[in-house]
Amino acid sequence: MIKYGMSVVFGILALVALAAPAAAEDTWSKTVAFSRSDATAIKVVEPEGYRVSVTAPDGVLTDTAPAVFKLPPGDAFYLVTLTAPGGAQWSNKIEVKKYQTTELRVKHVAAGPAPAPGPAPAAARTYIGSVRNKVATCGKKLAARVEFINAAGAVVKNLEIKVGAMDQASLPGGAYDVRAYVWDAGANDWTYQTTQKALIDADNWSATLACGKGALEIQLGK
Image 1 (cartoon, rainbow, N blue to C red):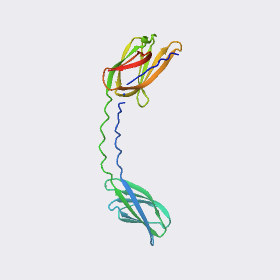
Image 2 (image 1 turned 135 degrees about the vertical axis):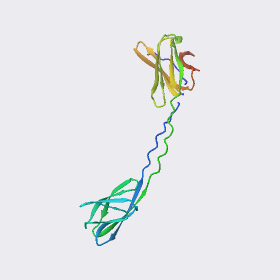
Image 3 (image 1 turned 90 degrees about the vertical axis):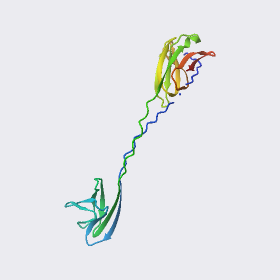
Image 4 (image 1 turned 90 degrees about the horizontal axis):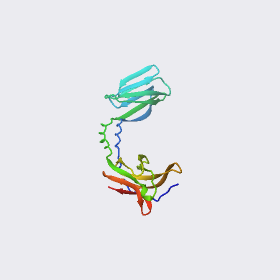
């Protein structure tokens, strides 16, 4: 295995996508009370002016609140539906008790207009630069590979550079971990060398794999 001591320096442009605001919803709340009566009934007191439907055994009873709906004597649950003048609806099963009147009051608060959506996220700015392979300065002519990894752990760019060659690349501005490898013919595979931080925030950035102070390193510049 071929192993050199290496150093890398380079940087994260975070793009924050603004989520679309959630649509506002109406709110409904009910209050139920029971009182003794000669008949079994549901009395819908409010909201006034709303259309009321009660699904009874003999069919659907309808009226406009306030309204009283007489029902067969006995304990049961009936589906009550309220329809606002604007079309909003609320349905709920309401309990009735034998020879008692169920008084139902419902409060309806209509939702306000949905907030305007936030601005669309800006496209990532990219910067062009170059990567050079000068590994031969260490005494061996080896191909090199460099990976640029963003904060999410994704490999944004993977470059394989032949001996003595240079390749251009465009990267979104930001912070990166940079991994460097050299080709190990004996292992017939890439041999990992090092990982270091990098910051890219302008055009003409450069990364050169070369020997420095007796060890292979990545020399960065602009």
